[in-house]
Length: 227
Length: 102
Image (tube, rainbow over all chains, first blue to last red; front, side):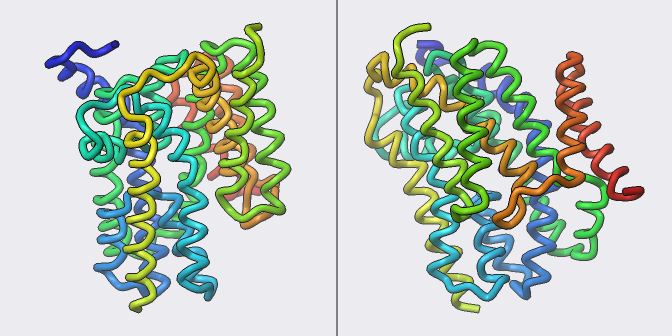
């Protein structure tokens, strides 16, 4: 194992440092969520509580999109669940590296968010638990602070888009992808290419969340003989 | 308004359950090598799909707009070995400029 028992404080700190740029991005996205929620008439309390207890950009925006468009509660919940279904394989992947009994593992699993999970990926199916949890902490804090700012100052939504801040997440994910492709070799490149094709093909037909979830199928390439 | 709270609570519980499922079911067991090989490819697959949906996806459509230019600029910067933060800032800057003048 990468982490000897009783140690790992450095891992948390290193993770938190690595998570800082993503925290900045999360904060900006959270501001736009707060503004959007406010514009939908959600008031001040509900969006903030939502961010504190759910802490999921994709799920929260999905609920806002569906309810905002006049959709029903079940449609909103279904959309959010589909979007977050990707955390199922991601959680299974980090599971062997978490600590304690089922309850503690379940709690530690809550630290799984896209950026932290990818940052803590050490290749070959290995994950750095402390690094992942550390990276999530600043993002969680920024998510809450950003939501509060957005809810209270709800006249900046135009600015978020005008400043081009909506591309910071895809740009960050691209940077993480480049790291994966450099270390993962030809199989990683092939898996990414298949994922791109699947996601692009499904966006026009499938409900939100399904394209990214279906793209996970590309990872089955790992079952083929060693290249 | 209560519909909103129902959604908030349900989504929170569902999301927490989804994240907890893997850690609880798999536990501390070492996974077989084939599973590890699949997991190793999950990151590139997921990240690639997220880049596609967040760059080109727009409410169930694939669109080529200012975001593609911004993320494209980041791709060029990363290919030229620019630091990540610079590449990301460039993406936002290009997107903003194209929106301003486009």
